[in-house]
Image (cartoon, rainbow, N blue to C red; front, side, top):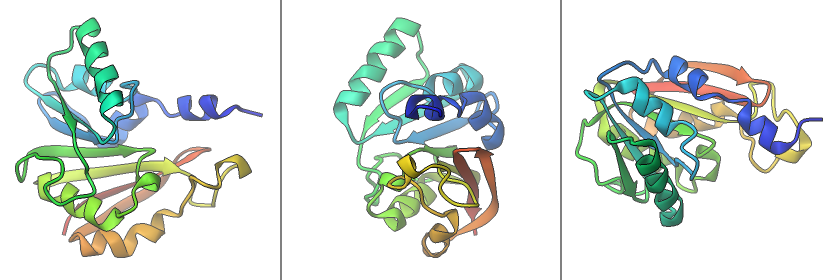
Amino acid sequence: MMKLKEKIDALSAQTVMKRAGIKEGMHVAEIGTGGDGHVVFPIAKKVGEEGHVYAIEVQKNLLDLLERRAVDMDVHNVDFIHAHAELINGTTLPNNTVDRIIYVNTMHQMEDKENALKEAARILKEDGEILIIDWGTQKGCPHPSLENYCFDPEDLAPTWKKANLVHIDTFDVSPYYWGTVLKHA
């Protein structure tokens, strides 16, 4: 049986970037980055010097870890933003700033998913996309140890509609994760 850390590691940054269509020159926000830079730093490399990444995290201590790692890795195209992404204007970014927004293992923690998606829609460029990847699959929770984290992506449908977003696709990312892509209506 896989341990929880192995289940988390089963989701590679390459998978996230491919599903999000990350390209050189893009501006990307990862909301709920955590402290390891699992997604932020590979995206920063992929978007290159012409692109930019916004690492948005509510826990200041995790951002401090990321900032230290960025210095050690000589990464200069990431802004570390201590913000509450469940508040309108909480990210502090201007309207229409980013090409892609990525949530990885974050949405299940959000208490106000509606405001989180409204804030995401606010900072998303008109032709941008939001990629949400979280615990579970379209068939349900893959393991009893994950029950507190899993939820059905269809449970977000009323929420994304209230945020004036539309659904593009829902898919299983791995045996442990589902993903969904949204864009402006």
